[in-house]
Length: 335
Image 1 (tube, rainbow, N blue to C red):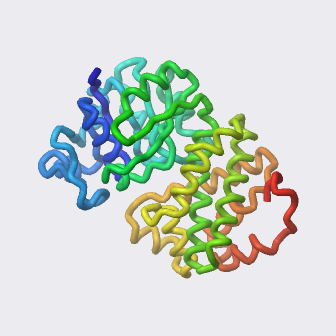
Image 2: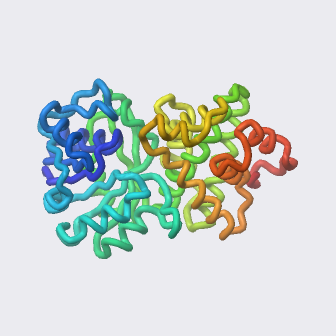
């Protein structure tokens, strides 16, 4: 059954999800903060800033009117950056139909509160079922029609199954998972590890080193997720290892790109200004360090990337520190 679905955010992933839903014959409306972007989607059926060369479905509509976007929705999908997530929900709240599910596409943590995005949904929109869509989902590959798998995470598996039905299309395989904590922590922290892996690429330290950083990074994000109440098996799946590998190795990954440029000696400010897009790991690492402190966790990769992002140490020194600062223990232990 077709639904009226609103996607908030016309970046690469929001536009891709809106396109997938439109091709599933849903009546999809995408909200773009920039009126010119909405006009381009409606008139040209393209979003060249984020998805250059990829035509969008002719049936996909866009608006820059947030109230119109909210009122349209029987299902609300939120793909704005985490820094704007709460404010955007507060703005749509007066025009949103009661009880409709809200799905987060955003992978990160709220910097001041340290909340996951589904927790922000519950805080701002009580009574609305909250879910997260997460996994190894690189937008341009999905737009190109390549096979991919993703996870809908929400505690209520009945709701999860309904959202699964809405999103499932063609070669996009959609799984359900009740472990929202594990799925969201995996999605957020993999961006931090991707920066670390990108630094290794930029420094040219070798594939063995990158593999070691990815593996030990998985151990770190699993340790934090479990400390927060998640299940370790979740982090071995799509929302953990799957998303981590894709984000760490893909040339399309913004967080990996940031790390690579840092490894080449560029300043973070220059990198972010050139990109014109959000690399969530740069913001998430601040919250991750605070959570590590709360739970008494070492998390050396996360802490080292935090020192790089804050300018305390260079990327080159970061790798010297990771390799030499402390002796290795049992592989099952963090560090």
